[in-house]
Length: 305
Image (tube, rainbow, N blue to C red; front, top):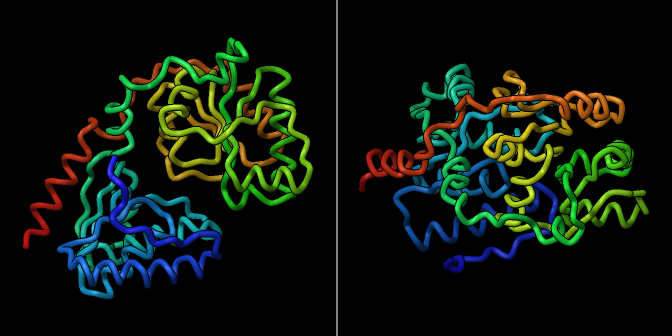
């Protein structure tokens, strides 16, 4: 894999400071490179900064994973995705519901074009499937016959009060089925500073293929990650989402995902239901595995110099 052509060296700042610094640095790259268009992905601060920097320089913007909505404006990601969608020229939607959200918001009235392309994360899983290890080294070393894969990293879940509730719930589940958590640096720092009682397996953060190996062999998933919710579905695993809302409403509506929030009682109840649930995973919500090809063709078609 090639190294990035530019590294902005921006990290460990508040949301406003980070977005502002990124806007400044990305603008410098745009002025130097003079691109025909800027392609942004997802809902991070860099997504919004990239889109804003491009539009300020009259450069076209294409947004991959457009139209997703949690309808929770307390989430920084929700602000990023709404603003990015409003100023993007091409909007590539992973799901039908995402495209419908944009139509309801009348983004086309400003000249934006909406395309239902499918999800590039599904493309990635199909492409990577043959290279996923049979197992994760930790699972082999502990000889775990079954386990729950858990991740927690979101800002709203990594406060002392909320994290304690989540840890209490996970400790209880670990007594029934072992829980394995690749621990995010933010979560690890809070666990250490608060001396949080964690009786389950905390392991080092996992790379993509390591995470996919954990996912392939787990009993079910518990997470606050948007991406892992989808990857759980791709790998035919039931997911318990440790949030009160999700962008992937089709998974909830069809019984593949349970919204458990952060209260231990609700999490325990969701676990009791999920562990006995049998699903065939026959639905296809995320395209045919060719979303990347479609997006590339649409960019070429619409952004010709």
